[in-house]
Amino acid sequence: SKGVMAGKRGLIMGVANDRSIAWGIARAVADQGAELAFTYQGEALEKRVRPLAASIGAKLVVPCDVSTDASIDSAFAEVEKSWGGLDFVVHAIAFSDKDELKGKYLSTSRANFALTLDISCYSFTAVAQRAVPLMKNGGSLLTLSYYGAERVMPHYNVMGVAKAALEASVRYLAADLGEQNIRVNAISAGPIKTLAASGIGDFRYILRWNELNSPLKRNVTTEQVGGAGLYLLSDLSSGVTGEVHHVDSGYHLVGMLRTESAPE
Ligand code: NAD
Image 1 (tube, rainbow, N blue to C red):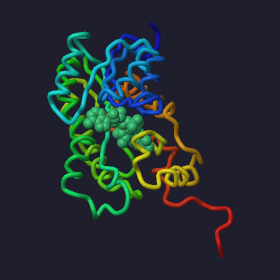
Image 2: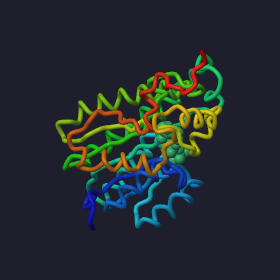
Image 3: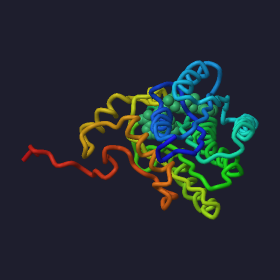
């Protein structure tokens, strides 16, 4: 097949449905000739992921709950058995107790702090540990972050702390893996209405705020995140590692936008 991803094989982790960011990235790289495998978390999501995978000709669809090493081990064992190698991984996974994605960060419990950091941050490192031995010709690892890592956003709370740690882990992994020609990057996506996002308090207001206050005056789509994912997963970005790339209509650069009618 043709395209910038021709001959490349990648594992997509984090598709829940056709609105998932992981699915937007999957479509973008599949369009450019990548061969894909997918993981799903649990039987309920298997019913969603299998037809999506089939629609782009992906045959390898395996369970993976990143909360246990054994589950990650078996997912990567399946990939190794079928393919023998791997060129890229998309990690689009996060979780926190919904009750702590509203109100104040101050209320974060010890148990949910540990759970959120485990699923939303450590899992990327755990995945990298299994992916690296399969990336014999180098590779690209990609995760998803959010501006709440850098600045306080309402209700993002412990997830903001987890994303800050995730962005730091992108830099440490990039330093560790550069010698093996494995690149490690993140996309910091603007708010998008997905299953995970619906757990965040006042999410519709956050979407509206970004639309009104970003330079491009619109929200981003999973297709736009997919385009950036294609770049970071392909050889087009062969000089790029340890980067957190914003796909947020420019929201991250705004201190305050000029208004046509500032009050006197
Ligand atoms: P989504 O609900 O479609 O995807 C989240 C995925 O995480 C699901 O597929 C779910 O199965 C998976 N997951 C959660 N716990 C897991 C576990 N223990 N094991 C395996 N998988 C698990 O939502 P999304 O918005 O596409 O989220 C993808 C990534 O993008 C997340 O890291 C999220 O924080 C990030 N992100 C989202 C937005 C947004 O506004 N939607 C913005 C920036 C970053």
